Image (cartoon, rainbow, N blue to C red; front, side):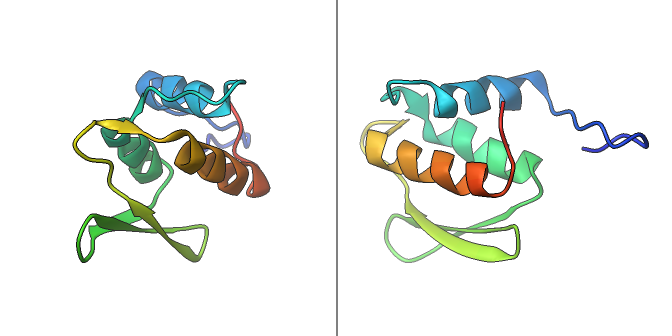
Length: 93
């Protein structure tokens, strides 16, 4: 969300998820439901696709991620990819 003066803010839970995504070394304990909630909080449309795929429309782009299973945690490779994508669009904790 953006205030009139251009300052951006987000829910605390989304900020915590963002901090986890940008942590070094890459965290292997970021829950997928939290990542999805962050995407939605940033204005994304999230849709279930075939199999375990999840489509995310954000920043005018479509990205497809794999919903982790059976573990609720997102793998490190996906977290690194998400971090790079968010960073390329100016999203930082």
